[in-house]
Image (cartoon, rainbow, N blue to C red):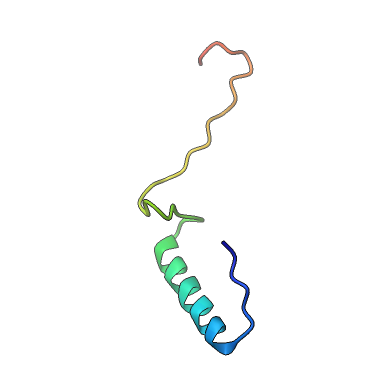
Length: 52
């Protein structure tokens, strides 16, 4: 959900949201909104289809 900012009040809300997000990020690149301690993993594709 992106924020469209057109008023100073909207800018204040957006700034607070971004500051909160960066506090949650810490040294990570992203976070899950439902479980902020969760980590994301990307599984490698198994081209040989042999389960290794």
